[in-house]
Image (cartoon, rainbow, N blue to C red; front, side, top):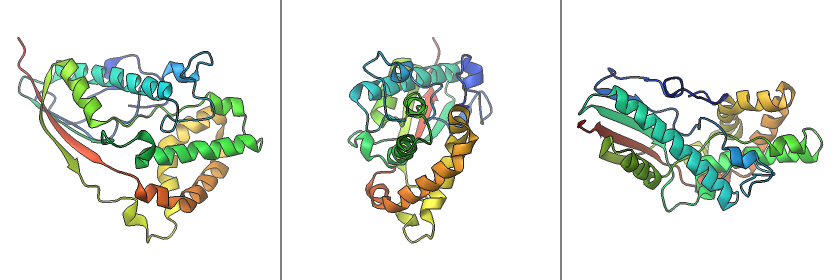
Length: 244
């Protein structure tokens, strides 16, 4: 799903990506992206207002709950859309980054990377390069679901059974990049590719190079935090239940 705009139509937000349309479906790209930033986190009157941050990982519980609720809403719509398209007994294979239930949000490696980006933006605000108010009103529409959360959403939906759920070991991890020269730049380029459009739309193009140069240095300086964090990808195989 494209995170640059809100998606109001299920078909537009969650189109079929692969499979034969009736018997199989696979997705390995989009689950971390939300259809929109939770409204509460940019509402100054809300307990979930995420002032001074662009992400939920180290934020107040109310912020995390707002992100989690938005993710649950989006996933429910996704499952409902797939249930309309997949035949009884058809399989859906999902590959996605997920947080282990026992791992705090702040110790999941992907979350650490996005928190670091937020720190760089706040540093620029403190230097007067960007408006602090603009930072306060900018949040990334990303949420890394836990397996327990996903299982609960699937159960509530009622259209699919979980046939298999297992951990996949990524071929590239933070640990595997330890001896790689310019690892900060490599990670910065990856994060820039994912977030540049959102940042450009909110802050303007002129800050991009400075922001991601700063981010690259921060990743290098604090790489031990990333290496010590947890990175997990999951594969879930779901089967469409028979319709009554």
